[in-house]
Amino acid sequence: MEFTIKTASPEKLRAGVLVVGAFADGSLTPPAQAIDKASKGKLAQLIKRGDLDDKAGSTVMLHELAGTAAERVLLVSLGKAADFSDKAFRDALSSVAKALSGGVAKDAAITLADADLPERPLAWRLQQISRVIADGAYRFEAPKAGGKDGKKERGARKITLVIGDKVNAELEAAVRRGQAIAEGMALAKDLGNLPGNVCTPAYLADTAEALGKQFKFDVEVLERADMEKLGMGSLLSVAKGSHIPPKFIVMHYKGGKTKAKPVVLVGKGITFDTGGISLKPGAEMDEMKYDMCGAASVLGTFKAIARMALPLNVVGIVPATENMPGGNATRPGDVVTSMSGQTIEILNTDAEGRLILCDALTYAERFKPACVVDIATLTGACVVALGKIPSGLLANDDDLAAELLKRGTESGDRAWQLPLWDDYQDLLKSNFADMANIGGRYGGTITAACFLARFTKAYKWAHLDIAGTAWVSGDAKGATGRPVPLLSEFLIGRAAGKAE
Image 1 (cartoon, helix red, strand yellow):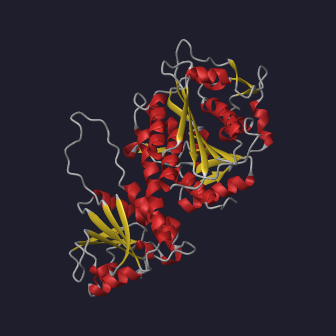
Image 2: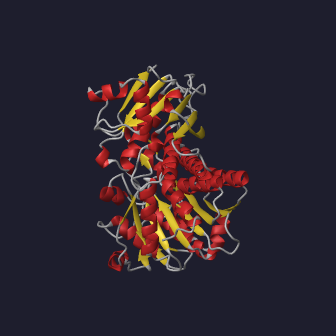
Image 3: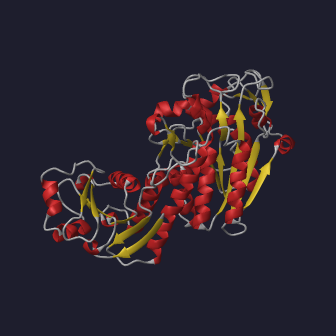
């Protein structure tokens, strides 16, 4: 998708679709006012008679509107002016993205950047527009007999962002940031949506190496023998039941100063999770191909930051394996030794994400990181607690947590903090090892993070539980690309020296 910014009179723009906004009380944005004047009050008339719903994101498509050069005018509701917020703005953008991606017009001009949003500068609005519109054009190329279905490709591919101000380098950079984040989201979605027999640990490793080659950053792939030498007994205990070899992927993006401490991202890469010997119920088990969405988000974020050429050092770590039952699989009650030397009694083999992450978090110490953020589809308890709107956030550093929460709000990819109190650590007691890998019935998201916290005492650390936000089920089943927007915004802020 190609984006350009320009200053122009909306009524004179030649475009397949011209997008303008209106509020529920009938007030129009400045570009919509120009269209209304050119069409002799047509927009005000249709709003007055109720053709445009009050809800933000409602739309009306007008064809060959008199007084305008565009073939179509898409009028989108911004909701109530008094309640206009980030959410209403994004709701409007999402509807526009849907209309443009499914329409026959090949190009569009969008004027919504001039909608006055309190405390959000024009650069922020432009970044959101380019990201949401580009993300809305995402399509997963599912493997089907005969290749493509032969349908004519639809959707606008050339987008002009119309603004009232002069175009400058800052605004152009904002648009490119939005595009880069959408590109990273697309990669994360593709990886998540691929079936488990395609997106294996080796496939993730190949993807990382291809990214490294494309963007000129270093990638290491550790094999089983390397993990054995490092003493990663916890990770390898999960891999024992699978015939497909595990991979331990390490990416080095060096955009900052040579001696600057890196931010480390760690993504859970369980490419398919049966639960192991603690076998999951069969219903909806197909969705366990999404158990590598933490890994996918790290790869997607690396693509985004490399595309933006952020002046920052970032290390990405992806422990990748399947979790399968089998004659060699780890049994409930087995005790394993992690890379840290701490021993773990495995009471439930379906609590495997923390078993691969703990060794990756120990490995992260060698980089002397500024901070570490792990991302994992870790607990169903998080979905029960928070639903599918925010990701769960736990951290051993309040400033880091506040920084991530703020970036989540800015990006619309929100998180909600849960407590990481020592009181919960007692739930992980074991009679036969330093700790158990589960903490009982209650507080499952918290006890999982408490488990990981035992391996993160050497640095500032935050944990994002994305079990509720990484994918959606039902008719719209598919990966969401989250939390690539949050992570990208976090790293953009870090690169600009805006750590909390």
